[in-house]
Image 1 (tube, helix red, strand yellow):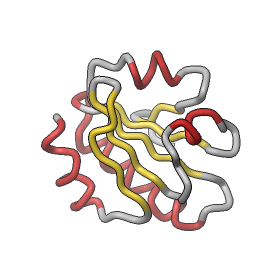
Image 2: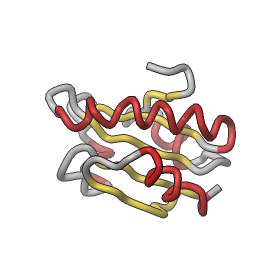
Image 3: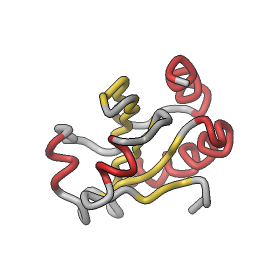
Image 4: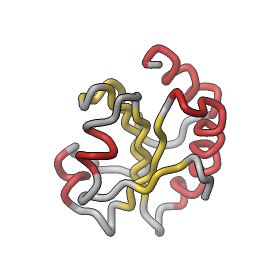
Length: 108
């Protein structure tokens, strides 16, 4: 995993995501989810692309049950863009790097 990617948990969600001064991209995933593994290098590449302008991280839904329920995450992978602690965008399933960049740019 890239050093540009944070690991989000139920325990650090408030500090890492809700109180972030930067927009945050969250990748909700699970070990058994094949599309999640396909999306992972795309998310890593986007983290590298935006550098310090965007916080990017992943949350394993099997190890953290509270936050995914709070955000009604029902299918994987789910991507959320949060800005100022509020959900600005949500995408379900696979997305290309180009489309993910287009999705994120207005929020930076």
